[in-house]
Amino acid sequence: MRLVIQRVLNANVKVNGEVTGKIGKGFLVLLGAGMNDTKEIAEKMADKMMRLRIFSDENDKTNLSIQDVGGELLVVSQFTLYADCRKGNRPSFTNAGKPQEANALYEYFMEYCKKTIPVVESGVFGADMKVELCNDGPFTIVLDSDEIVK
Image (cartoon, rainbow, N blue to C red; front, side, top):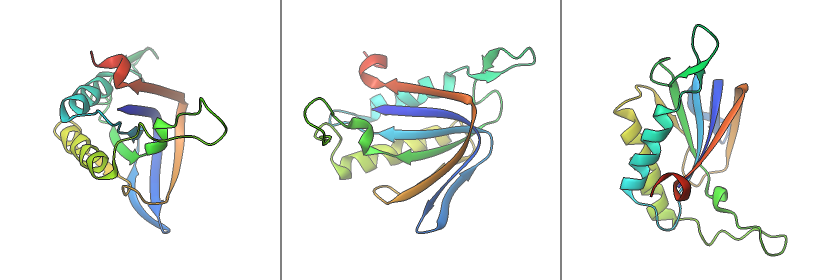
């Protein structure tokens, strides 16, 4: 599983011009599920993400987690995070999870996060989405389960 986590002041996602998810301060998370991902991997990735201390404290040090600041989550599925660009100029997506399994993991990831984060918004799996955000910092972190989960 791959996550691109952007600390935001606000973000939203639209499908066909309609807002499907909108948050204030928190994380915009682009989530790609891989062929071998499981619910256990999704849980470990969610836990790692929610423990990241990348919000500033009263001394302007990055010491606070999303939970500490009452932040919100906007999770958007993005299979292109599994693009393999090693050969030629057209990316291959053979390492991305199959749509049905990837969607199940995407939904599971969000439900798991809702146990800890009260506001979890989303895009629409497989849809053509338009994402707007105000990246705070900018501060962007990439988590890859191949590096995080052993």
